[in-house]
Amino acid sequence: MQAQPYLFFDARCRQAPARRRSMLTRALWTVQGLLALIFLFAGGMKLALPLQALTGQIALPGPFVRFIGVAEVLGAIGLILPGILHIRPDLTPLAGAGLTIVMVGATVYTLTTAGAGPALIPLGVGLLAVFVACGRWQLLDESRKIERRVD
Image 1 (cartoon, rainbow, N blue to C red):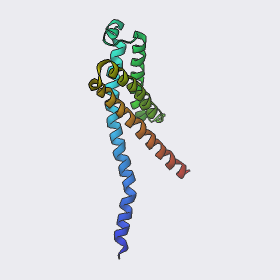
Image 2 (image 1 turned 90 degrees about the vertical axis):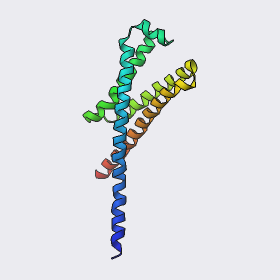
Image 3 (image 1 turned 120 degrees about the vertical axis):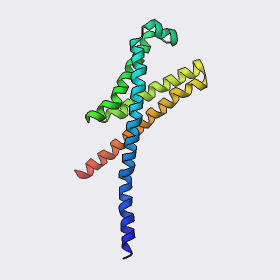
């Protein structure tokens, strides 16, 4: 008779990783959607505006700013499409890592030109990109371990 509470406790412990995985997946999709919107807008503006307007706001060469815009747009696409299409889901953490590199550069540039206060924005966006990269790599590793156990 006393074994029943332990069985209940044991069953709840087995459900905890699945519940945690579900919560992490929801949080990752929310952050990925937010980051995709941010980077599509920022990268799209860098691609759509004339070079004179871009170099007037940012003291960087025009082709380099266009390159950053292309990287941001491709990173935004890489955050969303692999998960939606279920094709090459290992590209999502790579997109997050690439956008992290872009945001490290943006943080350093903002810190040197505008100071510490404005640099908090690219720092926060970069930390969100780190969360996506690490979270998706963790979920990818867990799913590969499950596949190996099944095989």
